[in-house]
Image (tube, rainbow, N blue to C red; front, side, top):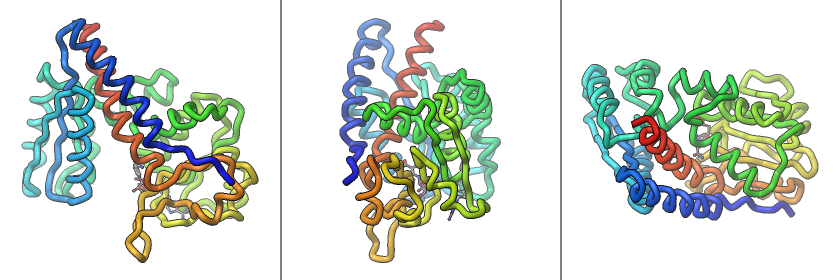
Length: 285
Ligand code: NAD
């Protein structure tokens, strides 16, 4: 039976540390870390995510500002808001909730956020730094994956890590992070031939594809560590991951559940990045 990696527990421990450091920063420099979240349109899933961020900020003693813009907002209006927040000293992190409406160019929007305030780690400058092993802001979900592995004492160095999914927000930065930790990394994706022959080689398998319960026990090695990033609804409306938990649980050594695994880590690492951005701001003052 595999051990469950409880993301809520890891998250809680990290948040306690964030609360202490946030208070220290207030006492030492009179600075409250501030996060601005921008939501364009009224996607219900994004609204829930932004609300959870606001609550998490409040619990950690951080300032949270929310900008809910109507769907028909022009790209220029959004860019002007970001530029204003770039020069707002109360704000240390800016998050633009994706996806954006189709009339906006997400790459342009992401490039407009100052790299110093890019707490999502999506700006090309921050992605470049990650690949050069000199990261500043690291994308929150991959960063959360690294923290979960470290928390459970799982060695990364020298291990074969297979990442399934090559998105800019999860798959690619997760692969870069694992490479920076001296793992041997393979990235697989929808066009990969004979996927099982690759996933069965993984000591650590990270799956971020958005395909409910796709990974079965025949696709993993005995004793593999499984990180399930997927958040999907199955036919009965239940939230499930990309890995078939019940099918693999006797064969894997460790596994993250869905929900309650990687998910809670994402918001926590967003707060971590906001705190670090505020600390760097104070150092540079
Ligand atoms: P995406 O849709 O941008 O990319 C999916 C990737 O998976 C692509 O590279 C594609 O080639 C690959 N893929 C799809 N089906 C595949 C298959 N059958 N075999 C091999 N490769 C396949 O996805 P994303 O934004 O990275 O999100 C992936 C999943 O992770 C989604 O379920 C999403 O909801 C979830 N997610 C969770 C968190 C979190 O905080 N836990 C954060 C981000 C995304």
